[in-house]
Image 1 (cartoon, chains in turn brown, cyan):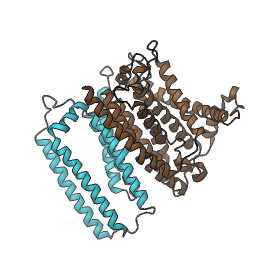
Image 2 (image 1 turned 120 degrees about the horizontal axis):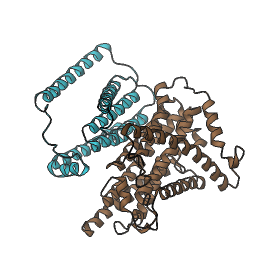
Image 3 (image 1 turned 180 degrees about the horizontal axis):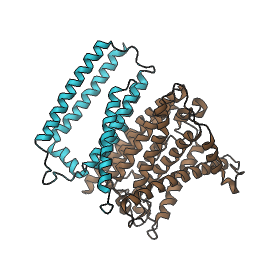
Image 4 (image 1 turned 45 degrees about the vertical axis):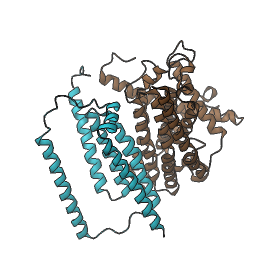
Length: 333
Length: 175
């Protein structure tokens, strides 16, 4: 794509592209979410602004920009202002290593997978700092919940990653996709020879992704019926908007990771005609399923969430890890 | 990458930025009065260190620094703070005690810094003729599990003892 560009121009192209993508993506995923929620609940969703409500995100952004930015009295002003930025920036860094196509990647790195997880872990810290800096009871409760939720779900997620790394043998995202070329039975999701429980691995990853991005049924952090808006309670205007952009950017990064690791990235399911179109189709298919889950399942209770991780997901992912090691040893590779 | 004329200057500037980030983070961690700000300082310091590791051709180490120190250690510290106290820690120590402890800490860290700096100036100033390993994941894994296997296992033993100690402290503290 941009092989001929000199390095600094490439960097600026990446930055501008990532910002435009994150902004547009958030704006239209909000629209999609509201439309989908409407359909699930037998109502039309936004219809007034533009055809099928397509201009609704523009109107929302204009409203958010024109609102006053407030730092509540007694809050930690520096951290309060820094938190939205700290949530958004890691997600944008992650976008740099995601291969959208054979050559559609901003920066191909041999350690791409690790970049995703290293910077993904910063985001939780930032949401939590925002909640703490607000000096608001609800926000602090929410911050404590975020931390315990993250501690619980980071473990099975990393265990699943180790299992997958044993199968792929590389952290290079482009290389992982190339391994899955030649039809959907070659995708890691269906690599039953490497590990008979591979589909279960995908399910564990998916659940952990929902929990890490604070999506329903795990959105304990901003449980609006009990905590107002959780960690985001004190944020107004674009501060709140940036948190939302980051949430959708993180969903996209999580789904893109799943696409690369389990669903064959840009590879076509029938073996011919691979390209970025397939990547985007799989990515937004997964994003739609995330929206679907949110409007289908009610929010779980907090101890239910922690029990699910500590009593089911962690033992299960440990078992899968051992099983995959045994399978590798037996197959002699 | 070499096609751009000022790339060397840009690289120097980024290196300087990471050094500044590390030092600023360390100062913030040591000097902040609110403990949560100290944790933020630790996180910033780790980020700077990760950048320095990347400059040392060890991106794996840099990313692990972020994943472990920011993603796990800082988050765990914050977790502990949130479970332990909601108010600011009450009552500052007397001026004399603060001066004494501050002076001791300054003297010790000065000694350590002097020793490490001397080591750097004396011996390993010249660039090595060949790199020991290529810093790749494979090389690190092999050296951790073969050459430095004993140290690796001992570290996990230290962690186990720390967990047991924490459990013991927590149990006796409750009664």
